[in-house]
Length: 374
Image (tube, rainbow, N blue to C red; front, side, top):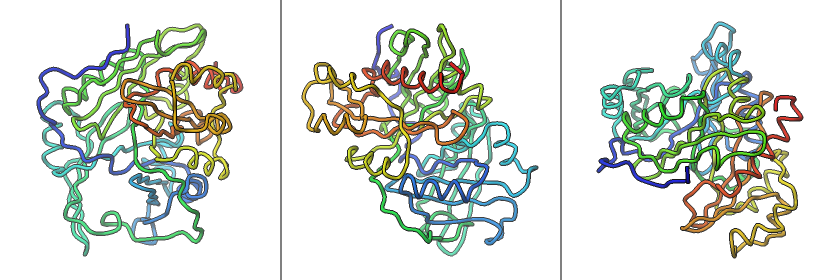
């Protein structure tokens, strides 16, 4: 099947007017150390905290921000807590993809009416700075979407959290906003979850990739991308395809134990400066051989950046009808080969780097081979 870019027929308005990603919450084994890592390696700023010192005895949560990107890292204080059980089963990973909405009650009620499973009804959180209204539904695996309404809140994050700053201050690295979040699901699950986003949340099917688009001589996968009406929220959903050896999706499912968020793509306006800073901070990236750059300009045409600089930093290039993009992928950011990050700069392109798929997946296979899981 050729790559297709199309709109879902019959959707005339956005059922869920989303303003963007509100936050991503990671359940982790050690929240204090995870928060320190994202500050020191990725240049995030610690802005808020909730834990035993603030009246919450069983978890600790650190809120980190850079540009419009906001992470919460949460750890449990005892082994019987659901957070600890989640980490035991899956390792560190994304539990909540929170979506910023104008009306949380409306969004939640509509989603449930259209077939979503509730993960938490509407709750109203208040303090001296106003109120946050939020409600949650389940998506693939054990991941949830929380609808967050914050138009009547002027505090640092939300009630229950206290403002907090780190003792160490590193400059941010230029991360701007969440471009997209990629989910890995089991064989046969991709179409089910695409249909979920279409039927429940009114998303449109944006792009389809089959195993001819995303394959090497050893492994393959299939992917479809869904997007909300204004394009602020995009979710590629991957499933494994038949190959000679174990694909990266199968490896993820083996280590994570269920469907879940594979990687988070974060946009920057200057990828060269961003990757220079991230590498200096110790962030590890997948390696693409130098011969990739020998013919890349024949495929993508003229670009504004210095190709020598992109080669030095191992940044990939691709082009579509709208323009071109620059992208690079980290290695997994925890011991299990599950969650990783993509750093992306769009120079007009609205696609996802199809021309780089083969080089990218060969790079992932080299890492799999080192782990003995290919």
